[in-house]
Image 1 (cartoon, rainbow, N blue to C red):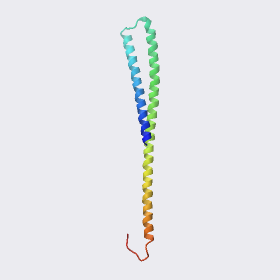
Image 2 (image 1 turned 60 degrees about the horizontal axis):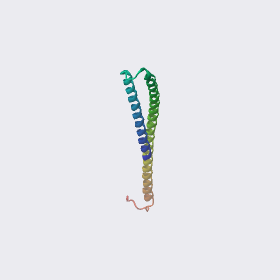
Image 3 (image 1 turned 120 degrees about the horizontal axis):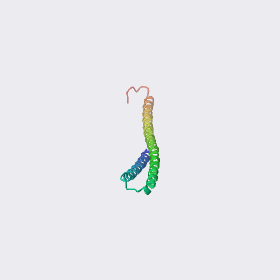
Image 4 (image 1 turned 45 degrees about the vertical axis):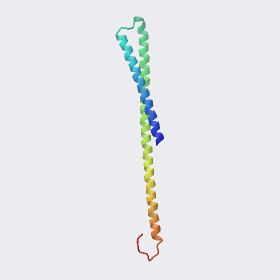
Length: 122
């Protein structure tokens, strides 16, 4: 179970990093659009700015897709962790029932081994 929790934490960290990368891309895009809007680029640099914006948009799309994949993987890791916790709980409950069953059988064996004239309870 510890391994499942550790894997989930790693997935959470990766997702957070990818989200930070998406935020940085959005900040770059906003800065570039702001500079274009302020007229800081001459006519010669508009083509380069346009290519950069298209590149940022493509990269942002890829990062968003990665965020979706990582979120799905994180959700799956969380479910796997819950399943393993439930499995451990079921195994512990089964072990407790088996222990109780053995104790009951031992008490019955003890009662069965008493001499026939002994009517007292243990």
